[in-house]
Length: 86
Image (cartoon, rainbow, N blue to C red; front, side, top):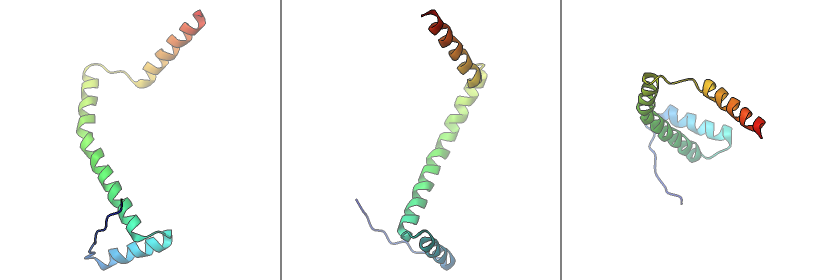
């Protein structure tokens, strides 16, 4: 579904730079604006997750977490042993 929206640029240089970039990319300026808004929204979602990630990392360190490489090596060794028994 396509929706319309009017964007007012209060900065003439910003508008000019957008139009120049649209020509350079051979894309409508509206596509560039849509991509920029989508990227901004995704970055906001990522930023909201940072406290959750930091809390999980702190809990992992507090409980004596191990590096993934060590866990992966142990899993590979266990699989190798299991396969050699069959």
